[in-house]
Amino acid sequence: LKETFEIDSPTQVKNEHLKSYMNSLSERGKYEYTANDTGEDINFPERRNDYGKKISTATIANYTRNIKVFFSYLYQEQVIRTNSMKNVKNVKIESKAKIMLEDNELKQFFRSFDVTKFDQYRDWIIARLIFDTGARIGELLDIVPSDIDLRANAILLRNTKNKKQRFVYFS
Image (cartoon, helix red, strand yellow):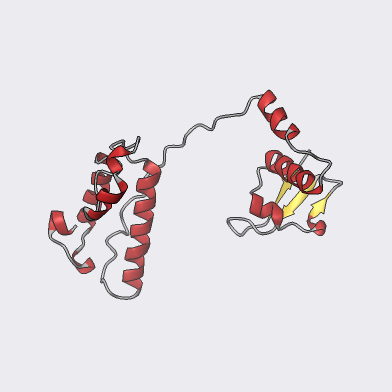
């Protein structure tokens, strides 16, 4: 903002400045811009195999979200009178197809556990539950015996990412 629009205070930032910045992100390549030259002498960004490639929509969405939070904070603290980011639309993230494991790879993975040892049997159970239910590791580590319903093959997950309890089912 300082280089392009000579803006050095958040009170001067307008909606069009932020939109211009978001557009410039999608046009520039990875690691082509640095805040100062000292990092280039140490990190050598041009040596990276992804140097100059397009920045992903997920990265741009993260930048947008962080800037929105910053301007919301400035507005709440009454540093600025209007929130310039209020009407800036979120970037649509392109979802990437997940690579699926072949049946033999999955069988090989589960056979790699030595289920005669307690710690590996425990890890085998956790891996099976992750595969079966789609639950996150942190969600599974927080279950207690009363959360498991063996008759319905269900587990109540209490500590979830979105803070809403849910049941998952296992085979």
